[in-house]
Image (cartoon, rainbow, N blue to C red):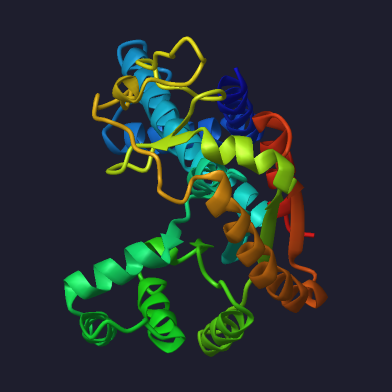
Length: 322
């Protein structure tokens, strides 16, 4: 399946990454063995043993082999981790501040977590950050809570402040992915100003492109598990429990989450009528943002109207430092 191919590709990427460290570690065997033998020799002399003495020879050999093995294990373990980090750093970092764009149904919910796992950086949702800030009663969270209680809309200034607080956390040290922000050119400019004050900037803007004509089928067939966000599709990724009517449409009562068995839902705006308005809004808001970042050479487009393996391959190419 397409999902299995992606998993296989990611495993191959990791195996390739670590193969080079194995070869490097092999070249260091001789050096570490010589050092270990020297250490064992000094120890033996200190304790009164001699390698020429038949009685002490076994002990001397065992000490040398033990020291060599321990040193080699530590070296290999350390160099594997270091080389893996260095390889990723040279390919995708330094601090990768990524904005992921795509119309409804383009695959952000599928590929965003894959990017998150591959690079080891968090995907930040403005909604999640807002709720967390309110729950933690941070200074910015209190401001947002007051606005929402009054029935108002949270200002760009407050949202940017929440992002500023969130990206100072340890898991954002090497980068982060912004999901759902910025939505307007004004928000993009406010984000740029905040990042500049932190000595950073947006390093990649990736847009997943899918023709509007293809999106209706994707959107209208989508079902989600509300608690986890897991997404299903009646055609492309149906839940195991799904049953269909004689007309070929899914029986709602059989649409259950594969993991928990809980009922799946369809979003109220996952309809053909709502999609027209959503797409008009997306194109109207996104184009100015892409034009804003294009002169910096950070905008990359990905053809998301193909098999998942092909989309993932293009995403990897887009993420690499040019």
